[in-house]
Length: 398
Image (tube, one colour):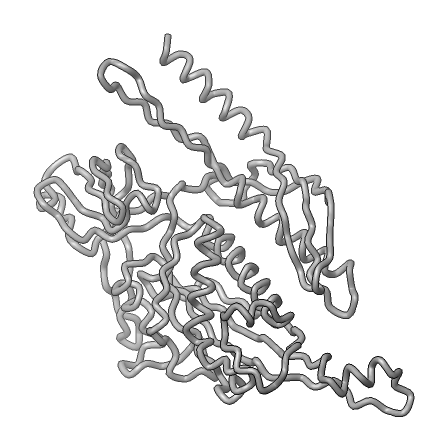
């Protein structure tokens, strides 16, 4: 009778998910040239991404008998697209438009297989080199190569869909002008695959800060109104660029899977002699700091959105009998009883004799039996040596 009730509840949840969900979400966008319509469109698009990520859930249940009692662990997970989006409210603060929307998320083909796995994928964020270091003199922003990726990791973790680790001491590009296709000493384009393996992450995020130069307003003429003349004299209208390229790589193969340029402008509304430093409390109070913070949020949402439909992959770092250890645990959302597929890792060489990583399905399933925060133990049907399961092979959930 209990199991019948559980089954009925699960069917009800599945039916509800199939019909769709109504989600409320918030989005923000910078207003340029007083173009409110353009900002409203961009803020709405950001809110739709947020809503789709929130609705990324499907029914996944595991029943167990404990001391004669049936316990059920159910989580929701689904993929979907937004329809019938409505703006509920909007507000403007410091040239940033915030909208609250309500939208219907229907489970239609956001991901090819119609579902998204429930695990948090790990991303390692390297340092973001500054292309023109002299531009950091204004405001003493010389710490931006390390502080910006730290702030990005914090923003991604606040979103809650990925698990970001900051490795800002690492640099990917010896040649910033040609990034992301920089050549390394051994002739390969990047050493991202080695970085991914060293950090134990599934994806590697890097970037280049292209431009943080100051843009002076046009010199006033005799027809300039007094208030504009005073603003120019006090340098209240000084604009500063923030142009950044973001690159996301697969940590196993080193392949570039996503890139995006963010090009924003904010007011540098403080004295030129103030040595503020990037990421300080005073920096975030500036209009320019608020623009950078908005860019960070856009980057975090874009990253979560682009990786949402990717499979979850974890390294096998130890084998013992029929047990394997993988480098992901409860922090990634793995639970006892979860099942994964084993893939073997091979190195192949391209026409230039550069090593490439290939993952082949071994048609072997593993069931998780023990879970720790940073790793988990799974059991195979037979001894790992019989199946030729080795360290550096991987497990995958689609």
